[in-house]
Image (tube, rainbow over all chains, first blue to last red; front, side):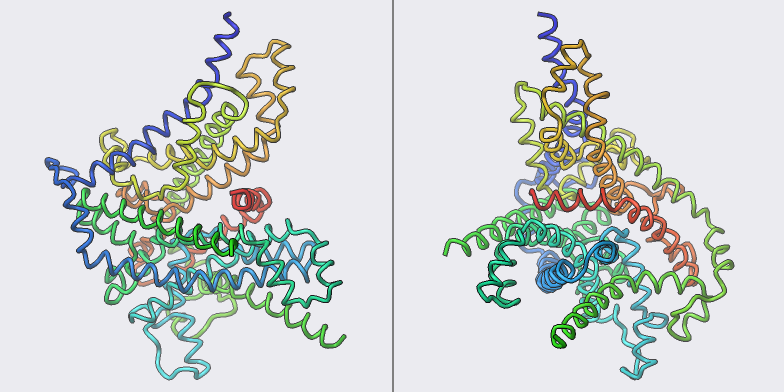
Length: 297
Length: 273
């Protein structure tokens, strides 16, 4: 009797450190933020309940739309480029390289992904600096351009730099994931295909890509999720003026940060966070649906 | 044959080109940190200069290693604590039957999809009530409640620890907690390493949370310090770049050394998920 009882108490004992911390430090803030999104509060004075007003404001908030469009632009340009590069590199690396060289190349391309995002932002800031930036010095030295380009100070220059940064940071990571996916495809399928006279590109399109679909889908969805949360790098690169020239690189989370932690609109900030959550949710679901429909037909 | 060879060389070259592209910013950073500030304006620096020590002096004139120390101890505690709580919870989820197990596990899985910013405002308010604003606690505790860690540990323990070992230990009169410490932990060492590394990395790179919770300079973590390099070293670009190199390069080396465990965590999560 005692033994049975004592045995039953252990699982609760074992999950409790995690669960207690989880409820207090993770779940509670999420629930409480939801409540906050229906209030007006600056964190100090009296909180007032305002109903759905914050959400209505979200619909007419010009900065929110601007940030949504900017974020989408970055994601939509960067994702296909990253995935395409990653896919090709992974296939080449798998087929033509072996052993230590293969591992080493994988790692070197992976480095940007694990490097502190803030550090990457500063690196890019210095490389694209108007006066000391290596990019401008290179372009001038080799006579490609006559005048230094103010990369970070112009709308499309700023967008170009942030897209390049995102692309640079993620293609190696994606290559590593796709590479792992490739190792699950058996050799025999390729051998059978080559006996049937399939060319390299046929094998790539008819075998590799379809069999990698789950991995590619995972990457696309996590890219969307991560892309919508883009903050560290643009925040650092485009702090002055906030959001870059003409707010051209203001992302959703930057707008959220600005609202909640610079203007101290905790209520409205929370509704932006929930708006973002909803967008991410809908996009993930739509991507899943779209990709799955592709196979049915 | 020659066409094939040509193709091969071309593909080698393509991979090499991308690898150089990946590494170039790091290389430029390390080179630029060895020049005098004024020299940086004169042209591209592809080879090391001779001003490294003077720049180093400028960097260390601010208590730069304080930031390093802060980041390091926060990341270590977050990593160890998180690996421990998730291993313990994963053990319970994988090897015990208890009431509400399914519900609790579903809650854990459900939060995997939630973006980090969603509860941040309320989290900051909560930290103020707890008197944890401007302390390192809010950076160390949340990784101990990491849903991915629990999910991963549950999978790992479920598939790699046979029930028979646990049973036979029980027959020998082992205490349940001793089963965890002496049987489970040694078997799941690789999983512990992986989760530790992922949490360490997440903590080390975290910028938004310390940004909204810390405003005393002596409490700053490395990412915050990096973001303030402009304030710390004013117009001295070279010192800023060197500080940046000091902040990133050791971590890069550490992660290369641990790349096997780290890559396992990152790739397996994606292929199963």
